[in-house]
Length: 465
Image (tube, rainbow, N blue to C red; front, side):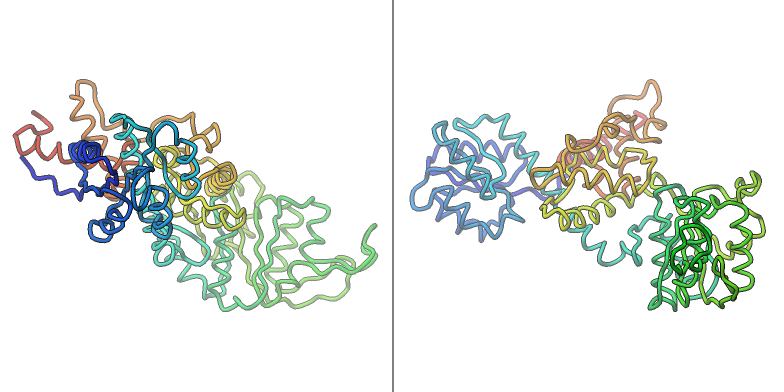
C-alpha cells in the first residue's frame, strides 16, 4: 500500500474533562488529523507554541484560563489559526459572542461527531482557500500584473509581449476584442509604457456621443460655430497634444467623421468647427473596436483606408473564457479594490462559490466579473463570499466545457472520477486547491482520492482493468 505523504492538519483540543478530551483526540485522529490535548487554557497556550496547530477546539468553561480568555490571548494569530468554541447548552449566547471576537464557529456538548467532522472539513477547505489567497497576492505583486492589466495565462502573456515591443514606438495600435475584455485598460497600459507617459491620455467613446456632437468633441469648435456654441471648446486632439488619444468603438463613427479623422491623421493638423486656422498636433492614436474589422469594412461601417491607418499594430484581446487561469487573480484584485472602496474585510471567495465563478462562461468578460465581485462584496456579511452572494445566472450553468467529453458510456465510476480529476488538475496547472474548488470537494478529499488511485495502480487495478 502506498504511504500517505499528505501533511496532516494539526488540531489542538483544550478540554478539562480528561475522558472527553481523549475521546475527541481519538476521533479526530481516526479522520486523518494530527491531534494533541490540553487540560486548560494556560496549557493550551504552551502547546500552541510547540505543536503549532492550525485548528483549536476549546471548551468555554476551563480552570486557570477559560475558552474566551484563550481566544482573546490568540487574537493576533487568528489569520493563521482557526478557533472553534465548545460549549454547553446554557452558554450558547457566550459562544455566539465569541464568534464576534474571532471564533470561527461553536459546537455544543455532547459533541456530535458528524457535526464535528463537517466543521473540520469546512475549516480545512477555508484554510486552503486562505493559503491560495496569499499565493495570489504574491503573484499579483510579482508576475500577475503588467501595467494595469492583470493575468498570467498564456493568452494574456502573448498580449504582454506585443505591448512590450509596440508601446515604446509611435505606431498606431488597433485593439480588438469583445465588450468587457479591457480595451481601455490596455490602451492606458500602452500609454504608461510609452515615451508619452508624462503627457495627457485622452479617451473618447465614439459610440456614446451623438453624431452631431462627435465632430465638436474630436476637433473642438469656435464660439458661434453653431447654435448653442456660446464659447470656444478645445477638442480631444488638442487636449491630447504630445500625449495619447484613445478612440474607443471607432467603427461606430459616421462615415463623414471617419473621413475627417483620416485627414487629420494624414495631415497631422486639425481645425476647430467654425475656425479658419489649421493647428499642428502631435498625438499618438490608439483605437479600439468590439467589431470584427473585416466584417465592419465589408458592411461599410469602417473605411478601409482608415483601418489601414489605424492598424499598424493589432492587438486581439482574448475573452475571459479563453483565459480561465486568470480568473482567480482577477477576483483577488477586485476583492482588494472593493474592500477598500466599501470598507469591507472580505478575505476570499469560498470553494463552492469559486467553483461557480470558474465554471461560468462570462459573456460580459472582465467587466461582468468585476460587477459580480463588487455585488458579492457588498452583500457579504462575513469574511467569505458564498454562493448565496452570487447573481442568479451563476447558479444556472452547465458543467465546464471539455470535462464531459472525456467520459464515455460504460466507463467504471472509479475511472470516470479519476479522469475528471485528471482533467481538472490539467486545467489548473496541478493547483490542487483550485482543482478541489472547481470539483466542489475539500483539498483533503482530493488528496485522499489521489492516494486511493495510487494504491489502485500499485495493486494492479489500472484504468483499463
